[in-house]
Image 1 (cartoon, one colour):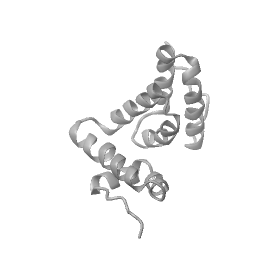
Image 2: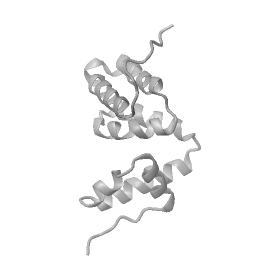
Image 3: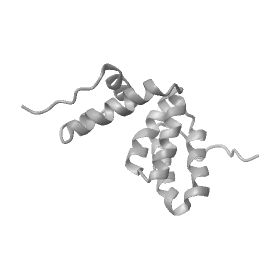
Image 4: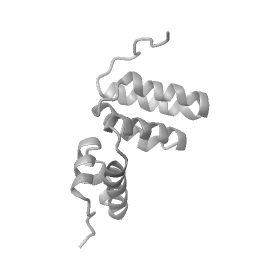
Length: 131
């Protein structure tokens, strides 16, 4: 019998809503990872830090940029959009990170952002935002 991740109800609800299929895809090969990550990131952290979900997702996107976690970033862009983060805000996170991380490190994130936005039906390019 294989091990099944034991997720709290809150973690399961948030994972299913924000990242559909993410836990199931990893549960076949890494059920303990899914359990630890799911319960920590999708239950303990939201319970301990009183932030709006959209703010938390913007922080996660920026953190993924800073740590070069492109695969997780690509997974979270759709979740961020679903939580009310606008396409302009997602792009701005990448644009601002370029000043700190450099274009070489942020360019793959720009490509992942564009792919996620197009998959969500967003027309590119976005309207200019400079003032």
